[in-house]
Length: 462
Ligand code: UDP
Image (tube, rainbow, N blue to C red; front, side, top):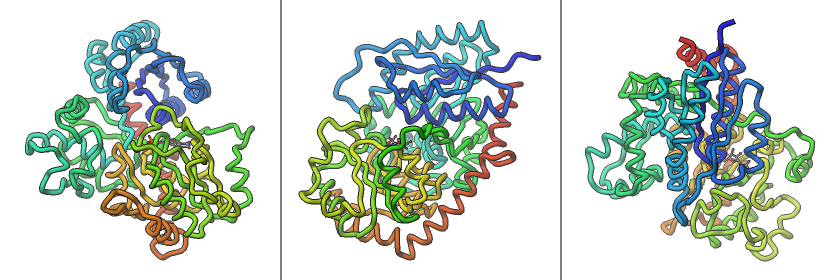
């Protein structure tokens, strides 16, 4: 039998990109005659959560931990650290590719947006270069636009006197654009601009979204600047084997005793943190709403992504809650410090709403499980996601901030009630139920994302 085509996959550090890229590899290997190796950049011993994902992969997907990168910059934003690690891993990636080239029929290198410089390495090894885009089609359309925006303006985007219209999607105020483009003198901006220029040069772009969710954006992407680069919607890819069920988390046991679709999950992703005042406003809002809730709470911090590299708070987060809050809400609320199994929670029948920071993985997880959302964006591209989710896609209601950037308790109370009991909530809930079905269809045989996967396999097996 002819040797399988083999692909090398290079996710940037962290779980947010590794999980969907590993899921992509699983789909490709399951449905096509292809095998894969995932190369993991490291900064020390790999975290347990990462090891458990990699060890659960099927036989045809191998993994290699690249040697740890030393001398990390201190006190900088997460994206600067990530870029540093990717730049410092060139020689170990080359070594791994050399060895794969001599042992397998290596045909392609897949990297995410922090790894686009590896396009040159793909060329050296005569491989296809694919970009794995772990955000929405809207964010991809914006990324195409960055090059033009850069040419047409010279001020910081937050000072632009006009809105930025993203082709096939909505328009944004410059201050709501994604974090990497907010400071034009920054190295991260220069890197993102280069990515924008390179988009037309990749052999393909896989997007973790699906045709039925962002139909118009995909249509415009294909008809516009992108038309030379094949765009493959391959989502929604979320972690498919979250746990073996042997040691059920306390939050799931608590949910077992709540009525169907009655609980709002409150979670700000793997790294989101709120200020002290905001934690208090949220607590009072939850209390006043009278709704059941499950709140994954972290210790307050001035920065909104303080827990990005370590989701566990140093101090006990429960110690920062208003006095008496836990006792007053114990009959209808559960507060879990730092981390809980979000996917399992969203799949529980007791959950009927999700107050989310609009990270793209969380958004997809909510769609897959048909849970209507409240959008409360914090950082990265979350402000853009929130606008699309509320204005264009009807997936979420909005928790509006006041002039000081705080979501007040009255607003929280009102939006929680509206989501769980109001007419707007019903509309969003109906749309989510439709999308849940559409997302399942996209990933089943003959579905739109499965068709994309077949096209990729065809390209790889050429
Ligand atoms: N997550 C989780 N438990 C938590 C918080 C987050 O399992 O307590 C998972 C969540 O299910 C998602 C990921 O962490 O898969 C967060 O990714 P997302 O893109 O939503 O946000 P980010 O953390 O990258 O800001």
